Amino acid sequence: RLGGRDISEVLAMSVTEAEEFFGAGEARTPAAHRVLGRLADVGLGYLSLGQPLTTLSGGERQRLKLATHMAEKGGVYVLDEPTTGLHLADVEQLLGLLDRLVDSGTSVIVVEHHQAVMAHADWIIDLGPGAGHDGGRIVFEGTPADLVAARSTLTGEHLAAYVGV
Image 1: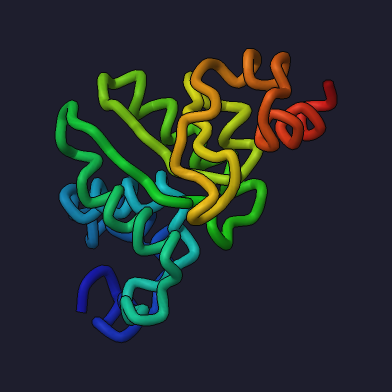
Image 2: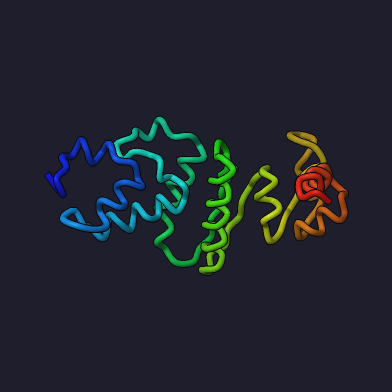
């Protein structure tokens, strides 16, 4: 027993509950608290500690991997569609996390179709002009504002509609 709980009770806790549990009192464990904080930072606070990895979506697995690497300094992260399956509030939390990573000196490359992520980006490389075998060429490179102003690609048109221009 730890902090009045047995292992089955701890494994049933959500990441958010466990972060609080391991953050203070008899169960205070700084290393566990730090790891759980990183899981919460990537928007996985709702997962239970005992949840099997096979039940996680692709986006959840990417964010789990990101959380494991967040303690490292510098580097480059490449994320492929990290917003898949996320609620809009979780997308906002993810964008805040990506901002903090960039502010700390990490390079972040995101392959993404979500317009909120594109509008938030520092730089966009748009591949096209179509999908699959109809794509693969750089059809635009620049800031989101430049892409919206140019409206020279399908992505630019959709992003302009998204931002209301």
